[in-house]
Image 1 (cartoon, helix red, strand yellow):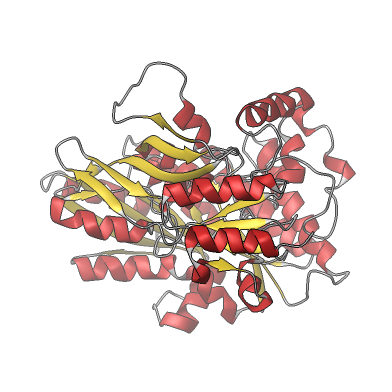
Image 2 (image 1 turned 135 degrees about the vertical axis):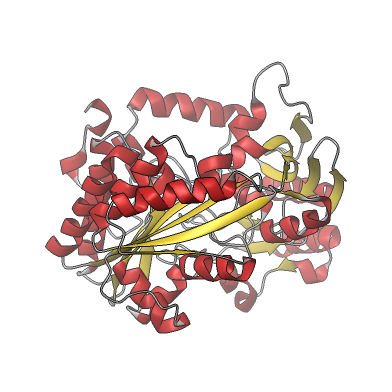
Length: 479
């Protein structure tokens, strides 16, 4: 098929500079942050308005090509990888804030707006947008919506679905529609809830009505150092069991701390096995009381040292080690894969031991930093070889062992990164064939031809990490 007529048509819609077709331009869009699978699109389009998105979708679908929506490409599950080629619709030019209503605490924003930029714009109003994924400084609101992103502060505030009231979406036939509204409890089906987390398989989200929160009077952060991971996990559970729900409750393991020391000179003790990072917010009178109670709990759970931030700068310093942990792992290995799994908080210590055992058994280094408060874990598998190497099978086996350990205690195979390509073949580990068929019927109601972001979410029988999921875990949905 010659694409020349389509290129000219797309150029007429978005402008010559924003309809990319040269190989050197397309290569930028052949992967996202998953970085273990690369597929080059046929074309890339960067629209500036919802009307342009609609016209692009109509033009592309007339030729029967698939469409892959894309934000900033920070996704870690391969959700923006064009496995079948087709046309990538990148929304990074759509960054407008159409309305900020400080009375109703809502805003209407475009899908390409960067999460951290929205938070900065809201500061003069004393408001903030709660979801804060680790890629906050680059990730877009549309990407947050697609994967139902979380972040360190979702323990207290919830994930993206808790903060989106309505969405403008371009459907697979180019139709533009709104679901939801500014109302906090709109009657009828929760179509907004269905779209959040749909990973671009229902349509292209172009605008969002987001719920905003008022900034608290005071915020305090502390770091507790532990000799063992077990003790840090038990301390995290003890804080929640006491009735205190911090805004953030994070754990960083010893390997990650040593990597951060190499890059930031953060001053983490080199011989510690874990650190617990806790942040509380609230009234100026109540926060010191909460901090005092948390410090007492941490001491009872065997904390070697507790450091409480006295100033905003100190607080940012404590967070810096956690926020930069993933990048710092480059000091330890040439390659890393960050997993995204969940386990009940009561099983954290057990799961962390199993993660360590899996890495040791398969000779794969595993570094951990994670959201301990809600049991959302991010084991990072470190290695030197390429994914086409026979040794890569050990990486796949380690990921499978970790996912299966979480499922066995009532957890899940993903908490905030989505299924995308990375986890699609494992959906049957948690869901029956009937469950998956029901999900597909919902997708088909929005996109009967399966043109929007095909081969994502649902099993295809094709490998992503070099092998099909092992037979040993078959029948997981019937455990």
